[in-house]
Length: 126
Image 1: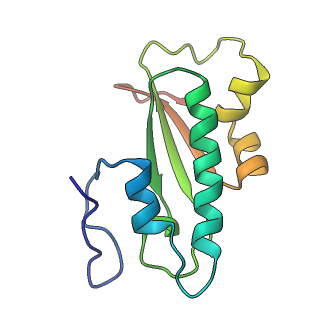
Image 2: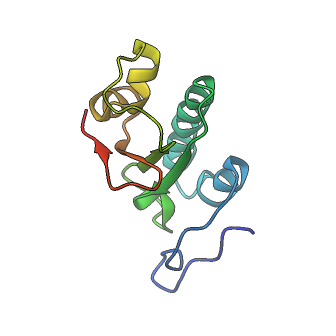
């Protein structure tokens, strides 16, 4: 199902809108009076490619001003939903840790990140 049109207030309709990364690019990553959106999308694309290298099934919820009609969004807010069996206390390789650490994701890509396990209310606070 394609990403729906914005409301009159430049927001998406309430709910979760399942889509591909290409649909995100078309809806939110194109030029709108500045190159801010394409810049943010390039970082998002890099982050998603790095996530895929983990070979762990996960969901990524994209939010913040990037997911609005704002022509110059501040940043991208993300919720990374990991599998329910993910051990939040396991030792990780640096490459994996850098993808789920709020501090590292903010420093490397500039995104605000919340990490949770599917089907739980547990969040990772790194």
